[in-house]
Image 1: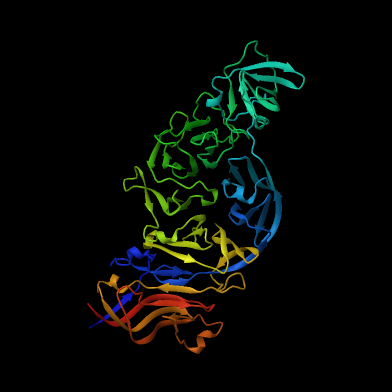
Image 2: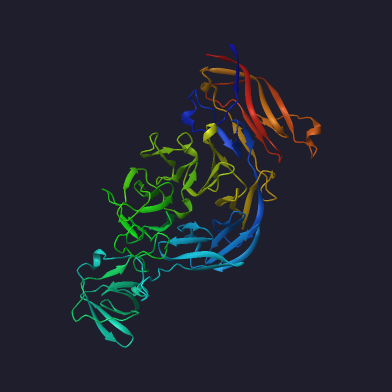
Amino acid sequence: MTNFIKTQSSFINGEVAPEFFLNDNINGLAKLENADVVAGGGIKRRPGLVRVATLNAKARLIPFSVSENENYVLAIMNQTLQIFHDGDLIQELSVPWSYQDSLQIQYAQRQGLIMFVHPNYHPKMLFKENETFKIKDFNFLSSDGENNIDMPFTRFDDSKNITITLTYTQNGILFTTSSDFWTSENVGGYLSLIGKTWLITSYISPTTVIAICNGQYTLPQTPVSNWQEAVFSNHRGWPASVTFHQDRLVFGGSLSCPGSVWMSHTGEHTNFNLGTGLDDEAIYFSLVSGQRQHICTMISSNSLQILTSEGEWVVSNTPLTPTSVNIKMQTAIGCMSDGALAPQKIDGTTVFVSKNKSDVCELVLDELSQNYVTNNLCSMSSHLINNPTDISYNKKSKKLFVVLANGNMAVMNKDSGLGIAAWGIYKTQGYFDSVISIGGETFAEVTRGNNVYLEKFSDSAFIDSNDYTYSVRITGLPLKTSGHNAKHVRIKKITARVMNTKTLKINNKSVVFPNEIYDNNHIGYSGDVSLNFLGTDTDFVDLPWMLSCDDSLPLKILSVTIYGRYQI
């Protein structure tokens, strides 16, 4: 047998899937649980959770920043929106969405206003007026003084061969179609014909509704064939995604037009009138390809990025005008449409969850900055990403948080400058339900027993939610990855170099630290700690070491060294 010493001083690849255990060039781990890879490649126990508030029920969390120093956590429950600031519930508003509806909500913020869209509901706006928050419908407004609503109109396929006869009646104008067309859902919707915008007020029958119009008009004597219906309504659906781009409000997709994009006038976010195609007027286009495109979400970056169920599209024009829409499909990964899985901006890239619910991808310009490509950020840790339900990136801590359906949280410590892209798992005594990051802080909604809490990660906390302990588990890769290709191994000693540490187990045996470090004012022990194992037999498929702690005390690992003998 031959003596060996193996030191691992970098863990920048985090927890890797078993199929990568045999790779010699990976600075990874077999398990990284409740710990983070930090600058320099070392490992530190994850921050604990501080209880912020008790919630009435499970909620969708959304961040809302009114100003640089004024940040709020929004919690959407069944028909209720609660607004938290510095741990206090400051206001509660009624909303039309259920909790299940909230998981499909997408939002976009501009200055002190946040807009919510859902394919089944009229868009809503939340804003702060003086010291009070208000929520109201987003409405398309008139620009011609006669209340012609400047919203998108189109002729849907099911109406192309239908004409409308207009006749006077006591409560408005009777609209009679040449064949069955109307339903009760048409009430409240708008039509455009004879140069006017008409509001449908009553449903009479499948061929008859009553509509009204402001301003002067003369009814035609013959049936009208040139008419259009509002793109957005209870009947046709509402915008599914939203963003602001180049000072335009952008809506993407709806139930009836899943692959269409509508952009407002520049600086006039309520005006979607296409006009005559002037540079600052509204823009409309549809994604055209060999597959049906369903817009999942949109991101305003240096370009307008449109993520669909089938691929990733980019509108690259600057400035963007009605006559200069250069749109191109870049990659064909496909995106999740869940509102809670909103793409995140990380180091100049767009990170999103693929439609297969098992990949976290980044959309990034290629080396020539001409086309976009996608990279799978969890290619070596795909076993950790299983049915994600929420996602958030904290720019300050450089962590991407992905809530999983099983109640755990996959976390990637990502620092491109240092080459760190390390996934691990956060677990707690309960279930993570939702996560957001705002103002440099990360908040999580956690279900513990019969209670639901709003909690915040804190570096100074070593337990969760005031009452719940959590364990750290860090396991090394098999010795095969070192290049020894050992068939039989005898481990004699394991040494861990620690920093500011007060607790550690090596292979389930407790390390003894100097008594003085347990003083509350002491930062912890720094240096090498070792345990002898009297020649523990193993083989090349076994995991040679595990570092752990169950105490609520600080732990930071800089390197691990194994001393032993092996037989080839």
